[in-house]
Length: 125
Image (cartoon, rainbow, N blue to C red; front, side):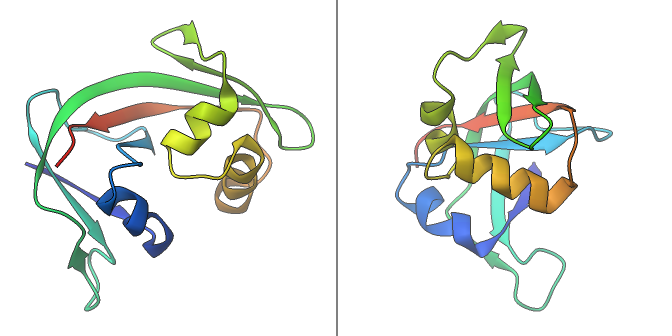
């Protein structure tokens, strides 16, 4: 079983099922399809709370996000395939639109040109 921690702002969208994916950086081991996931806020703190019952991982796919010089999202690829509608993808990831997602990324990672990581998706509760 693999656990992921989320900021509190994402918990309501995970609970209502509108957020069923997360983008994570490189690490030794991510969840694999078929494994159960535990989703928390405040992991490794006294405020740790489980968001929803365990869910099954549907996918763990390579993702690449390209940013322009101002920090806007220029392109997203999952498994090498371009995502045509950046706003729809951003909403599925818990944001209002791609501008909101881009702002979050700049806040978290600074101005970067390319992010490579893993897109984890899960089943509905």
